[in-house]
Length: 333
Image (cartoon, rainbow, N blue to C red; front, top):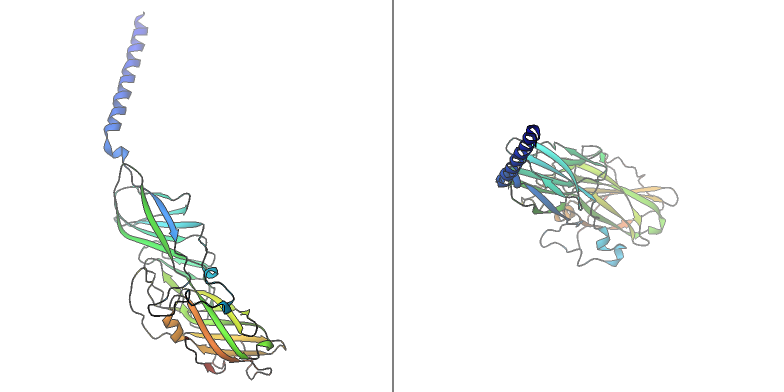
């Protein structure tokens, strides 16, 4: 064998030996085989109302007269979820979109993190201050005063994990995340004691509802808003409407904290009915007591509504103007 061929063979064997040694070093270097990776087990609490203790259990005492099944009001599970990962050490933020079939998240290093989750399929929800875990909030499009109308919020779910310590491990770990409702539903029932046959259609406004909610605490905003709704006719009974909202203002979510509700807010419902003869009749109801007992969804019962063929008032939806007719005092049965 020539000297040149012997030289080439020696170089090749040397390179092979070096690569083997380097591979062994990598396998023995423990940090290279560890990672901070989690597969999320995502689920949703599909409740449309949360009752306070000692209040009516609507699911148990649901009436067929409502013309809708209790479970039919439950929100559907969203298809996707967005997670914001906040590095508590240096306040950096990472955003990931997840699905039930693709729900793996990775952390760049060990340390303390805050995680914020919400569904990413909303249309009218406006998210604010998402760069800050503590300040992140959700509102909806429209006015921000007690008399200006805002859009009905989309169904919104949320969850958070605060000061979570992440450590690298040799295998992928699992993490359970349950997203809770941050938007709730009210069934407004308007019982007409006389003249139901005179109604062609009806609509209204619900005032004194929260204009937004904190994503990191579930606490509703102090700002109030007005939500418009259309009614469904229910024969001789009268009419009803399903209205979604963030709930009453300045109120905690039971899955986040348990502070007391600060009184001082007023909730009213304005109902306008259009008669078959084209005339309009309007009503105003003070439902503050019922809303305080049902701060996160429920059933609002309004009764003894009398429809006149020749109404005295002319209707109209300017909620900042008094003159909606007499208040109707109602109470939960």
